[in-house]
Amino acid sequence: MTSRSLRLALTALICLAAAPAAAQEIDPETGDFVLPPEQTQTQTQQTQTQQPWYAGGPTGQTQQREAPPPVRADNETPPGQTRSAGDQTSSQPSPSSSSGQDDHMRVVGNAGVGFVGVNEVPIGDAGGGVAFITAPTLGIRYWLGESIGLDIGIGLGYQGGNASAGGTSIPQDDGFAMTIHGGVPIALFHDSHFTFELIPELNLGFSTGTIYGAVSDDDRGRSGFVLSLGARAGAEIQFGFMGIPNLSLMATVGLAFQYLSAGLGENRSGSVQGASFNTWSLGTSLQGEPWDIFLGSLTAFYYFG
Image (tube, rainbow, N blue to C red; front, side, top):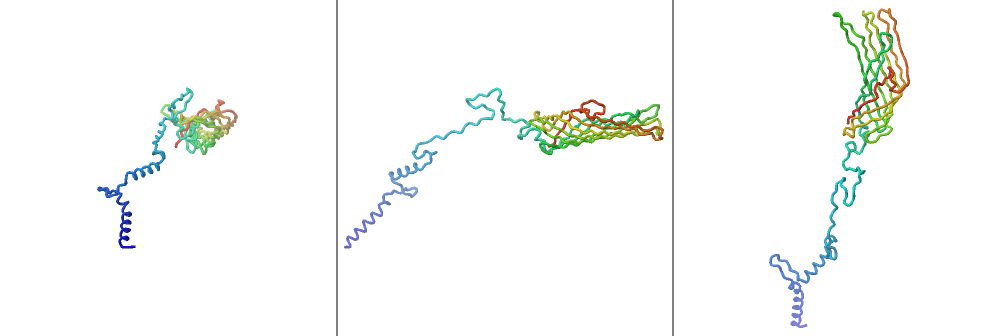
């Protein structure tokens, strides 16, 4: 190959290599190559083809996004529906159901303090019979679990005084009584604000005092004792419907065996002998006998926690 032919071949190769670069224009501001119009259109079509469905999809058609459903309150009637007169559904829970529990379950594991009942404790009187000292009983109820609890109570009572005549003070017959109450409440059924309970229980009462005579040698001691063993059944109502579920009232009737005794000792000089009295009974708590240990059928508790 001659030198002239070699120069022509090299010139042709240089022209072919420089052709693409020569075909691209340079942007004077950025210094980048400017694509030809036909290449720009091809690249735009490729970009549209790769767009996701929510931005137009492969076909390039714009799709409208579905609007979210409107927010509606729970007590608002949906469009196209009517609310019947008997539909009591409400989004506002009652105070007692704010935790999803009824009133009884809210006080499980909590202690309540309240009035257990009025007990009458016998004591001997001056005539050799029986008198009674009233001892209202206050107690604590603690629910160990959903179905079983524990009641403990104590009651105190005292009577006495003085009488004055002609500048002389004469003491009146006195007496002191104490009662102890124990029970095991069993929740047989509970719902909302109501609990039906069976309560096996034991009550003990003791009394002591003095019958005063004209002189100190005529003073006589007196005492008494009462035992009641039985059970009561009834309903405990908690005031959750009024926003105070910790407060409750309970009405019951009971069946119990009762034993009581009373005594009057001899005087200090020994000139008057002592006397005693005892009796037992079996009946309901509302039988109305004088020695009935239960004078009332209502009890009340306030639970803490």
